[in-house]
Length: 119
Image (cartoon, rainbow, N blue to C red; front, side, top):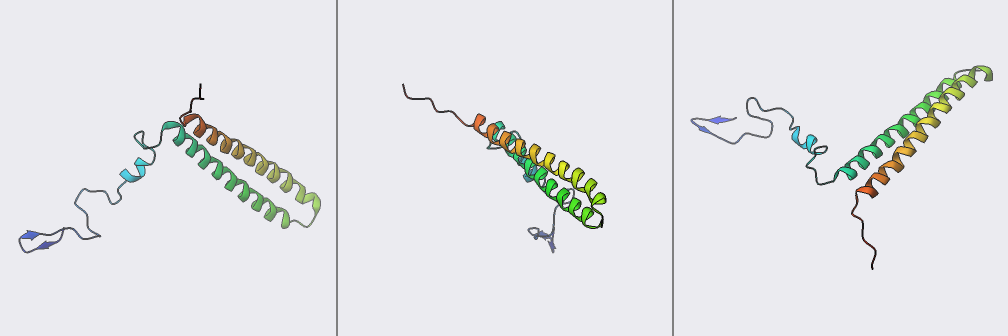
């Protein structure tokens, strides 16, 4: 805290109290805490969709690495192992990611309030 003579002033933007953490982790914890505004199903659906996005990104990286590895080989016989292993890995990651993506939407649908049909 800045001192001006005997009177203390407000801390400036870069200053913090002794013992206070540099980063306020409470805002990050609030994203995943149980008392969040979202209910459990919606949070679960969001997390599952984030995992799906991660798997799709990983599949794209695998395709790039596979293409790069196959492109450095002059003979087709040396390119085939790259294409087969990388292609199957990317396909598997895409299928798992797509399944998680749909599961995330199903979790959202299960968590949303259901309307009763008119009688």
